[in-house]
Length: 612
Image 1 (cartoon, helix red, strand yellow):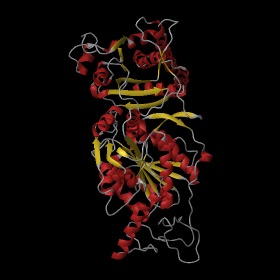
Image 2 (spheres, one colour):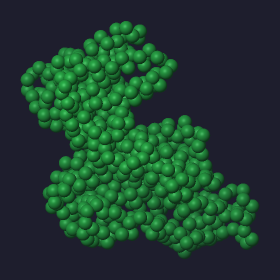
Image 3 (cartoon, one colour):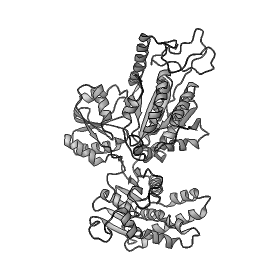
Image 4 (cartoon, rainbow, N blue to C red):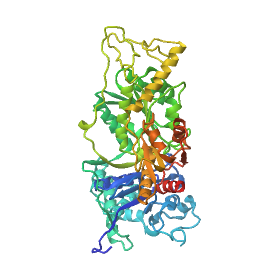
């Protein structure tokens, strides 16, 4: 680029970096994300990586990728298609080429296109030279491996370690292309490799070499600029859904004035919440890594019995194992938050892919009539607010509560405006003291919640366990009429939460031809699609549900105002089943897909346009 040439200004850009799972694609994407957030852009990300710890190198199952959209305007997703695709080997090209927008920029590590690598990736010819495969794209061939080795000739580390720095060279080139500052990544790298300064030096040199290559290479692409987004004033940080959930748990401890026990067994994609909490022990949250899912849930429930707040976290297979303990929490009516970070199923399924297929399990996956409230986060930052809300409902109504997230929300990132903790609403918790008369552990308040008695309080001795309890006294009871009454009371308590919920909001008119109802991680794609169609003059509105059981009180009347309801879900039709059972005669159409990938905006638009 000529020194006098001005950068080309863009509203937004979507970049995907792809390579072998050992090429550091997630780290590279994280640094591009962090830097873009620091520079004031709105961001959304989509990490995508194999479930295997180390898939065979250079093969299609071993491809790892990271997609980011950064923008000067509000963005709802990580982008439908990348404008720029950077691939480190032939396998990454094979897996990702079809997603690159026609005319998009393709940057390849030409060093990796050897005969052996092409064969492992299933290419019958070299796509870089056959003249047909890549004719619809702007191709830039960069010998990342060779250039990295040349830049690091003076660094005293192994040749294999030098080759691993090529992702930093690619990152440096992207920083040059899009006017990104290197300072944050340089500082992060120094801290990351503080005990191995030679590795820090090598990566920083590779980063700078990639940046400088943009200036000196004759075939370098143009330089672009994406200005700051007009975000609400305040202090911001980049945050993932799992990070936000962990911080929400810490905030819930402060807001409630209670200690929290977080009991968990490692499972993808939920494990990072345990990691986040385990090094923040100076707050009022204790972490417990149990030997299995049952023990994790039991420990959390035991903490609630002892007067603390119990939280347990897992993904779909773990919910199966926790079901009996959750059912015990229903019977003894103690607060317990169960976090389900959903992934592809059934069974072990697709551990690193997103899905929304646990909803009916959370609703009905227990013996007997066992109603449990269910709430679901919509975006990474929303996880902070919703986990606090789960604790509030659990303690106010003395019930277990499901908090649902999913792989897309959990691992995706966005800018988050830091809240002022003193402006967040306190979680009011009261424990009964010594009474003059006999203690009645199942005497209910106006919310049908029983008292939360702390063990050891004089005069508050009472029975606990899974056998049915007598109304008011809590004694073991096999009386048929009492069992019927207690079952209805537990049901009515959960139904009564609806009066405490905010009304469903509508984006667009409250009446019309089509209402799109979404939940969980489908929020971004649906809102983006509806916004674009409304700007085109289409009669469509959007409501997103954070509260799924019970539904907000105004949902039924809202649905009646529309001719048709579209319900997109990354499952085979679970929310639409609940809507049809709750609202008789609803004119609902499902759009369902289970590929392990989030919806794209254009896909939702096509469904809406077909119905309109």
